[in-house]
Image 1 (cartoon, helix red, strand yellow):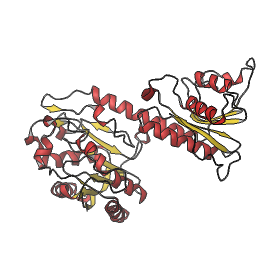
Image 2 (cartoon, one colour):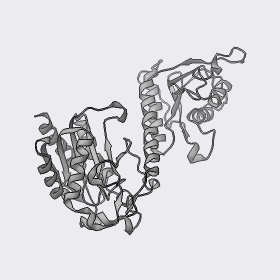
Image 3 (cartoon, one colour):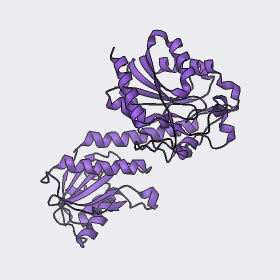
Image 4 (spheres, one colour):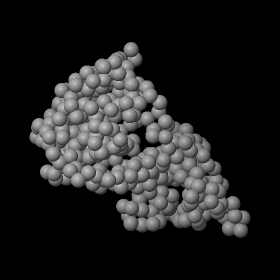
Length: 387
């Protein structure tokens, strides 16, 4: 996808501010990730003025040439009414491939700046270096590793999610349970890759999913955490505003499980599976599995009974229970993560997947956690975590 800015005004600090321009390219990369594309973004600049933006879109456009660099080049050429882009600089979050390097050279760009190297297809030195070939009739200056860690982390996170979802599809499923197809969640990208386990004794072979704000590659040691327990009829997507509020308040690690029967976790077909003590035991064993102790448990009010049973089972491993009020309505209160019907329905494609909804007496009225309540609960939880 590409665009020329409506107002191509210079930045506050225009001259050579590579990090600032790369930050704009990262915004485009994040937009690509949200659309399900490999997260690569680009911006094109001349004399301190933003001419064009571009991001990966080969899947959406069904076009193998729809890379971020090509999109930005096309938009800039339209803006300047010239396919030659003399004196321009292209900022891109990933080292250009051979195709994009060729397009950059044909456009006569003065300079290209990239973020993360690409050891598999990079054509600016990682695999080949087209820009260093003096036989070509134009040379473009190349500078790399500008915000390289941030650009690389975005790509790494994207592919972690992809691999986790592939493993989830491949994992065997019990005959008396169902699993929501991964495609049901495609329109609801998560900021952290879902994690899974079937190893807990209380799961009896079923698979449980959860979100963890600590990067999977960081080998997080046992330590304190806040745990967000979704409400009846909900799943981890609905507590994202609460997770964000906890991070903003300074919590280093936040966990958000999908109870068995909800979200990305397996869904037993029998209502009887969902006895409160079964869910309590699963959560108790799961917290030990992920090395979270002590914890502050933040539970949506509709899960109060289960939350109180879990606190009793955890004993001194739980410092406090913070109940989070839910409100009715669509959930569109400005936080962008409201309990919209699409998100609520995603884990439950048909009645066979709804045993947990029936067992928990799920009300038909949509409920969600508002942004103000999320901030209040987060501040209270952080007070307990600090003691």
